[in-house]
Amino acid sequence: MAQERRIVARSDLVKRMIQSHQRGDDPEFRRAAEEVVSDERRKRHDVVADDLERILDGRQGRRPLTVSSLKPLPMTRDEIPLLRLIQPQVNLTDLVLKEPTLALLDDVMSEYRQQEVLAAHSLRPRNRLLFLGPPGCGKSQSAEAVAYQLGVPLAKVQLASVVSSFLGETSKHLDQILSFCEGNWVLLFDEIDTLAKERGDRTEHGELRRVVATFLQLLDDYDGDALIIATSNHPALLDEAVWRRFDEVVAFDMPNQAEVAEVVRVKLRLFKTKFSRTEVARKLKGCSHAEVELVCRDAARHAVLAGRTVIEGADIDRSVAGMTRRRHEVERFLM
Image 1 (cartoon, rainbow, N blue to C red):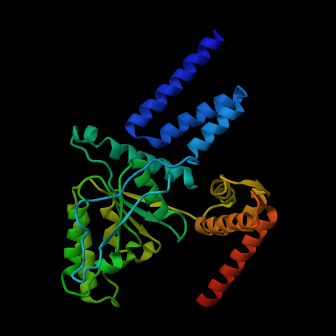
Image 2 (cartoon, rainbow, N blue to C red):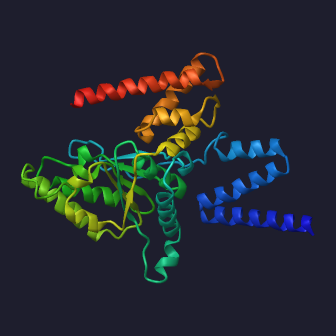
């Protein structure tokens, strides 16, 4: 009976994996796959478990996704591209996000995958997201990870090209971008403060105020299938009306000590390590996700160039000292 229950349990896991794969639900697929790995470890099948973990962590290559288009990129009158097409390389498992943030992104992606089901009930998925938080806390990377999970291309708007000094050109540029991104895309407006500043700011000239109005109208009228994600490091600068145009506001915060330790684990998971992650996290208190990742990459480079396959405490200490110096220099110039 016990063996029969184990077989049923395993078959249920396999069903979950196949069903989640068919739906394109990567988070659920990964959860089921991790349970299979845990089951193999309980049986002391460590070699099989290690192989499965390597595949799951992407050490044998990621899912191919080709970014291409038969249409020419939209351009300014000076032939400067308004968009940059990006091949998504970041998975949500590469990031360390707070559970409410991850749950919200999972919900939005689930709605996006089941647009036809919602349409049958005259409903639409949430497809306009505003990511807010300090620099380096994973907003842009999360947009890329969402594109990766959904298996759709990522188009990053070149805001410096979009905002034109020529009267009316900015509105035309935005129309060109939306016309190009018909169908399933993630369309990223990174650091949206450039386009959506508070219209009451007296330091801004009339054209930029018109730009804000145009952008708000664009969000109001948009009924396409692209998932629009905007990010902002300075939400206080955003026009008050901007907030109402987004279906969801997603907060990204500085990592706490436990999350810093997890970032270190994730970023160095392809290497053997010989140091205390808890101690490293204590030393990196106050650092952003991006800064912790820089420390990890620097330590890995140092170990590899020294001919070692193990990242030791001395490698990390050297990199932490470098980050501390860097932060002091930045603060000194900003004072």
